[in-house]
Image (cartoon, rainbow, N blue to C red; front, side, top):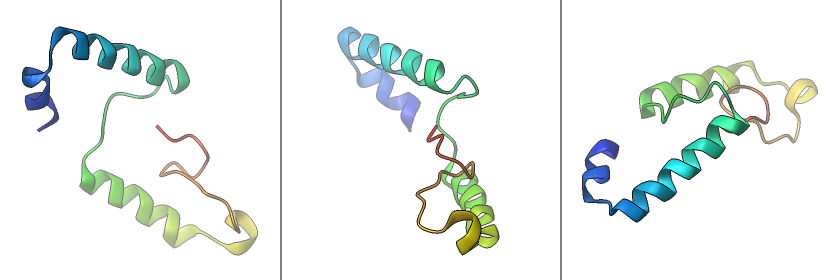
Length: 70
């Protein structure tokens, strides 16, 4: 679906998206684009199952188990 949205985007919108993706890659060099909902759930389930008060108590953590949000 995401790729189909690019066909509806204007050249200006595509340029802005490209700039945003560049910022994402600068922040998180491992970033390869969005993951599937299934992959997201799998990653988050692993975090939830392994969470403890001592290790994660009160923290907002990403699907990577840290504060890296991409």
